[in-house]
Amino acid sequence: MTEVLLFHHAQGLTPGIRAFAEDLRAAGHIVHTPDLFDGRTFPTIDDGLAYIGETGFDAMRERGVRFADDLPSGIVYAGFSFGVLPAQKLAQTRPGARGALLFYSCLPISGEWAFGPWPEGVPVQIHGMDKDPVFVGEGDIDAAREIVETAEDAELFLYPGDQHYFADSSLASYDADATALLIKRVLAFLGRV
Image (cartoon, helix red, strand yellow):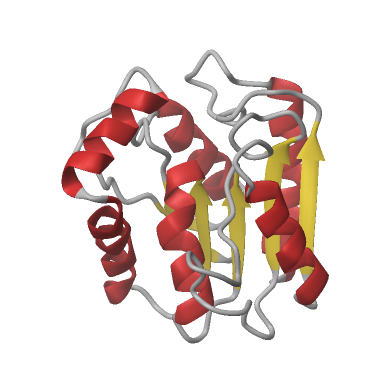
């Protein structure tokens, strides 16, 4: 059993994110799914990003980071797209992280946006589609490759397709086959960390 802090994407804590968390719980894991948007969900990524922009990306990321304050340090941090911001920050900066699961996004470990180098002894899996215009087109894949090249236990998994939110079963972008493989890989990861 592994404890996971799982952050939702820019459309909010959708039924698909809740279902993903339930799949992990059904495998025996403890999964926390904080709602950074206080119950709000959005019909499009752009609508969600506009809401985040009103609050401020840094402020919203820090809201997520604060959710870890009442949890033990030895947990796995996971995030979908925007949720990668607090998840990756916690995995890289909070002592005791057991691992990180980064879905559809990845921040660099060097340069302006970095939280610093990837911490020693913290395994990470990064998942995205090979033609996703955000993950591939905005440089997240390059950040993921940098982590894989420098961290001792890092894996990058690419799935065929061009959808960004492909593992959210409540959205039109959902890809059942890719999600089934993603969940299999995630459960294997959680079983060994």
